[in-house]
Image 1 (tube, rainbow, N blue to C red):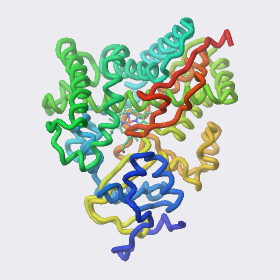
Image 2 (cartoon, rainbow, N blue to C red):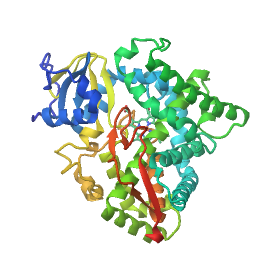
Image 3 (spheres, protein in one colour):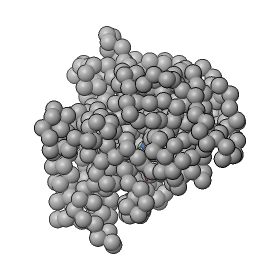
Image 4 (cartoon, rainbow, N blue to C red):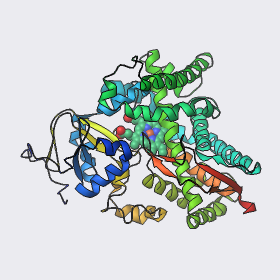
Length: 458
Ligand code: HEM
């Protein structure tokens, strides 16, 4: 349905409802949430009104309207809301889940670690971890065995996070925390449901028992990291929290670090897995990428200085984040009545912003399911509304880790592509699972079976 996305609020939309389905979408959301959300956009257009159980939701999918929500005057009347409240069982009150002064305190402590100069200084550690990742893939190939790609990409992102923000090599913690994170993802999203929020976490229903078990693993892990820093302070995020001027409580420190640990490794590990999987399945794109890295790197691992000379690598990463956005949906909740595109949004309504849907919006993307890095040539980017692409969000709450994530993705893709090729193990096709992040899934536990082959042998 065509609407005027640039319409200024008239105040006359008092009770005008946005279009949307009359059925309750609870079951569709449980079954396949991205499909539901993309379908609502296709059927009802740039703003769609629907219900999941008792929750009223407006999906806002045109960039012009998303600007109104994320950076326009409506921003001050929106909070993180009931979905993010559910995440608090895991993340606590950290950077991702809070608003106002509490959020600002976390952002102020974290900000120095994410400044351009600090990120520049992180590059050698990132390059090192990428070289080790390529070596791990080589070791699998030498043993002639299939392995789980997700396990390897999570190893890499935990290792990078450890060496850049948490002050020690943590990669091997993937075996300690990986299963807990996988079990935890659907629990986090379930907690967005008011039904679960109404049941205190001490009530021994299966959901709560699982929640407690997985949290205990993550909490123990973080307690070890914090204890280690109390004994040996270093210049990193953990010490930043321990030394915060305003003095942070133990819980605030735990919540701040848990947020960055979970938000920082799972998203990037997921994106790297999608990207390497896509390359394994698209030989023409893989060959163009290999030609670029061979000519620019000539056998060296990729460093920060190389990145401007690796435009195709960047385009592959950007296209991967378009088709497979790890944070495929981010919600807000209205704290007062709003008007968007002439429609009434009552107080309490949730607003969904979905990169998955907007990255498939027909006004901005032709044949959106096709993986085509050429969409990200500078000329084509300049022609497009820049907010039609928003894997990291934008505005005040834009992802604080955006530049670290892009850096580590480009360095890993270039370094791995130079040495190794991956092939899918024939069998069960890879689909997605979007319980919290948008993850590839081939078998229960989100494994993806691949084999690796050194390029000089292929
Ligand atoms: C490909 C990788 C990543 C993607 C796609 C991603 C995506 C996002 C998105 C969409 C948001 C905004 C959510 C909203 O507006 O509600 C966000 C916030 C956040 N991200 Fe990321 N992220 C990635 C990597 C990282 C990394 C590497 C870190 C840390 C090292 C990180 C830490 C955070 C934090 C702490 C927030 C909350 C920021 C705030 O509210 O002030 N993310 N991320």
